[in-house]
Image (tube, rainbow, N blue to C red; front, side, top):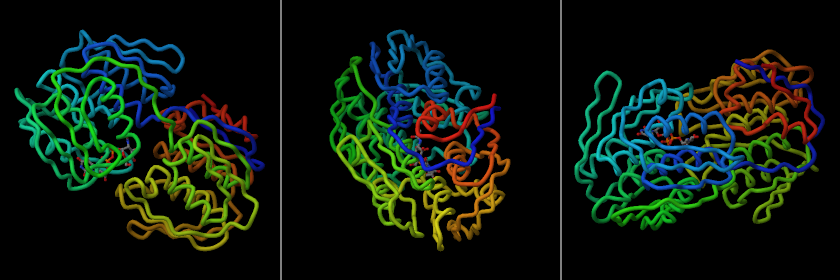
Length: 416
Ligand code: UD1
């Protein structure tokens, strides 16, 4: 496991180009299974989670090649072989292969991915959706076996707008007979990107990006060329890092409308955000104040930005409140920030932060991907040299983070 070293930073300044979205790339790569042809996916970030998804596709018989940020997937010779825990246990998004396998081969055998540090993360909503489409499943020795000789469109109302369940049901229903309507579905930009990809392959989907998606089943799909949307969480992380260090940065390759909840919150805090269609300027030129943040499904404040904004609020005078409503265990990073002299108390799903400007560097442990980013933000704002253990988490979700932060003036590096 590598370490990430962060020295106290002067305000971040300069321009940074945001990479393609991890959470869009993973389901779209999985969706390549459906076409039985060649798909060319552009703007794919170079991340370990993406490599794992490529290994999953190779295991299923796809031919994969990578040239810079372009991945070509040929799924003509794919087959529905069992996906072992060695592959699925590494990334939760592996379960998105289920919907694609079910649609194309009428059968999927997948080791359940299990929980992770931020929560138990069950897949009951995915399985309920598959059942509604006519499938049967049973679980044995940690594997789920799903079969459906004939997927049939229907109306599905999700108990919760789960991103993964919405994606899996979309994938399972694009080749089903008749019409599938998913209500109370997730409306995250990554859902719309997946629908966009599928429509280019020949699918008939409308409403993606709202809370009701309609999918008219088609007979077959082809491969296509598609460019992944920019990563709104990477962008948000840089915005908050600028906010924490009192910086002045320009983000390129963003879709501002995907970041409205983050820009509004930063503006409320007193951080100036200027939005253009594909660019955002963030400047700290006034007094910053404490805030109340509650995570919500899109377009609410993203749970994937919760720990980063918490780290920033630790550096701002006043009492801030953070309520996490999506995952049950997303305050694992708090004891690490406390080791850096932060004043945070967690009561159930709410963290009470008494902000000040006296964070002190320490040796800390990263507990998950976004928690690692939060510790970097705290480390840049703290006095001294912070060492973050378990820094491999960062390589799962932030492309070339060390290089990008250095280009903004931060003194950071990986130590392998
Ligand atoms: C995706 C994102 C993740 C983000 C999350 C919420 C990817 C690869 N990951 O994860 O970064 O934090 O959306 O925006 O895109 N749930 C159930 N049963 C289910 C499915 C989900 O109870 O069958 C619960 C989960 O435990 C969690 C909540 O619903 O508490 C949200 O999960 P979901 O939206 O499904 O997140 P993911 O798709 O796993």
